Image 1 (tube, one colour):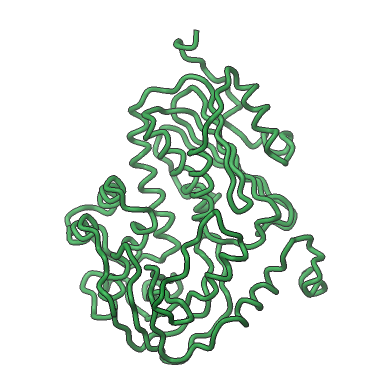
Image 2: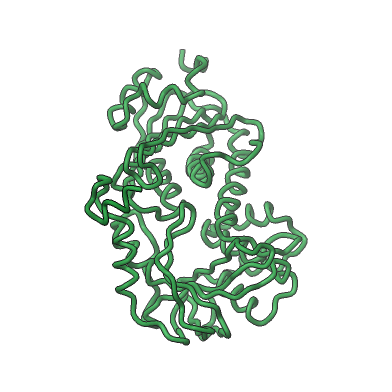
Length: 393
């Protein structure tokens, strides 16, 4: 491996060495003892190892301050700033059976109260031994710091639970997909919904769900409901190109005048995270229900959700070609939220209307660094002719 011979000298060409940065952030953490008190953002974590008996618990800032939680990740912040903030988030863990959500004990009930809250929750935990471990990165989850096994915990402030959230959590007759759809329609955010799903607070069969699964499941369930709505809308006229970027993730999203189809092309440039030599892949679906899990993983469902939100809001359906290009400046994985928010930023931009597909594609290529000859052959949406609407004539 290059890392063995490089030792942080930058031979890989990346602007920052992820290994050295991980060591620096870990070394900068304050000393953590057996007791930690602070405000959970609110944030909870449910692991997947050992399933069906998993580790679950709230996340707290390492400093133990009650002045406020770490700032939530945002596209407006620097990657280094986000990593520095996330490295101080301590994962407190207790082994819990996934079926315990049906009749939670005192500790799980307290964790669930944090998941239900829409505002930071004062929490005090005691550990069996001081938390340990390095800064942990993941393609779906946000980075997190050391972890420790809980011997006890209590909530020190009242959780702020929206009325709709409380109502849905108490409804054990509604299936999970319907509950997720109702929460979303009521203005509850995707992160909040994911927390509830993860802590076994939705559906008829209450189960704990690993956080990485609940994030993608929430994006997928919300996307499916929006897709049903979009399929009842009339196709748009003309070609509309949306552009946006955040944290070195650039999106070009082209809407075509046809019935709903969605295709995502991912271009990982050389020396970007996960892709030393670069990677190009694509996946998509049409009006029919999608079968199987996307090989583009959680990013596929996050990008699709952002597009469907815009189409549903405008009352239109369209063929969608979304191109996500990840540059070498994305040197550490920050979680699938980056994809969702970068795609939302693009769809919230002012689109440019074109009279022909050729014009739209030509403009799209001016903002994509990878040559068209390398990524267009992946696109199935462009392999068949686009039928023009009678309204265009």
